[in-house]
Amino acid sequence: MAYYVNRNIKMTWWERIYIPEIIKGMIITSRHFFQNLFGFIPFFLGTQKERKIMTVYYPEEQVQYPVAYRGRPVLAQNEDGHPACVACGLCEIACPAYCIHIEPGENSGKQNQYERWPDVFNIDYAICIFCGNCEEACPEEAIFMSDDCEISMLDRKKMLYTKEQLLTPVADLQKRIEFTRNMYAKWNY
Amino acid sequence: MWVDLAITLVKILFIIGVTVGFFAPILTWVERKQSAIMQDRIGANRADILGFTAIGLFHCIADALKMFTKEDFIPQGANKILHTLSPIIAVVPAILTFAVVPFGGQYTLFDKEVNLVISDLDVGLLFVFAIASLATYGYVIAGWSSNNNWSLLGSMRTASQMISYEVTMGLTIVGVLMVYGSMKLTTIGAIQEDFFRWGLFLQPLGFFMFLAASIAENKRIPFDNPEAESEIVAGYFTEYSGLKFGMFFMSEFIEMVTIGAIMTILFFGAWHIPFLTTATLLSWFDFLGTTGSNLIVMLIQVGVFFAKVVFFIWVQMTIRWTLPRFRYDQIMKLGWKILLPLSLANILVTGIVILVLN
Image 1: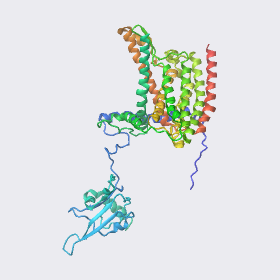
Image 2: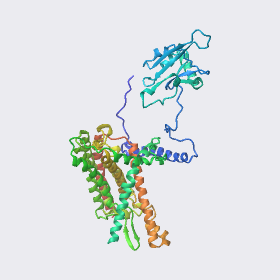
Image 3: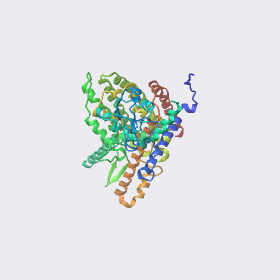
Image 4: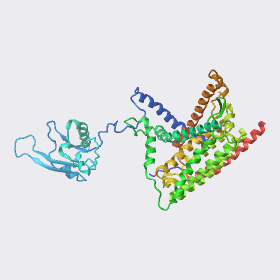
């Protein structure tokens, strides 16, 4: 349905003489000015922890990102230090930007807890588009989007992260794991 | 004679120091910081010396350094002489206006009458307007000489806007002249010792019209069509860089101080504190002797004057960060169809009231 904007607003005489309305607007802005000006003083003196201003001094202060935030994808590492990944290659297929490269490793029939694991697992963050498809495709809960977004580099080659750099303990990813379980359960895969 | 010369020199140095040395750089910081605080932001705070930021004050120094070290660019096809000359023509009138602006009264220091104004002209008010309108040439030449369509558009707009609003400004001043009966700024200031004879009460309409017209003269935001970042890049100074751009920038801020000073002199009681005459102040400090008491009163009144100037700068900044900008036809309509008839009516009413009261 189209929304029509009424541009022929009839102003009253009081509004048309302009000055009272300007003063009204200036009262609003200067109220903010004085509130913030004197709100600063206790903050600088250290008696008050909270600022009234919403802006964050970014590198010094950081906000907690919401769980749904998609930062750089990382590999989950089990408690015993082994990657949870089984090198099935689903994420490699799901990836629309082809930034994941996996070379699987296998044990040769020995009785071991782990049958398969990635020998090589590279993600090139210079190509990655942070879509989260790899996380959605993963059947083993092995790859997750972390809340880390500070991955800018001066050298493009350093953006290629290897398995050792990607591995993150499961304990650090617990919130995101819970979130993905809820999220993807809803869609009934 | 040498003493007079020395006193004048000190006054000139003081004025240049205060406007160019203090207000111009500080106001760049104030502009950023005040806009930030009004909009619930933090504002400039990154420039630091050894990790010490001083709430962003070092941005003034950083700005100045940046201006000095930037390339001084003259575009192809530009008129080099005029292109270099126009920032100077723009910035000099802004400083020169202060020659007749009194920043304090008359004091007896060491058996010598000191009048705190560089040049006490009988036609001070006319001098202010004559010099202020000279700045138009700077802007017009800047746009014309830089061989750029945006610049030319900007300078055309500047010319039309400044001429239209100068009419209103001059006619508004006529009301003030009729009320005070003098063009001498020191006399106008001295009359306002009585709180109820401040220009604000005698010429309330004139006050608002003068404020509007002077902001339009300064080309700040409700009337920023000559610069208009969203339409014509940066108007008349599109092709300027480095220190030349800095001079245009500086002239805007110095003009803000000038406007504040003239508003203070004409409408806001000059250097006087409400309900406190100079004689009362002098009698309070009588125990210090003539020179001592005069010195203290001088310091107080100069302080009061600059406090009022700072207040008007604050008002101008608040207006700049509160109001949306006008369209070009709206500016012309406001100037010619509303402010001009109003200022004429103001003169008429003032004349009738003076006639009736006498």
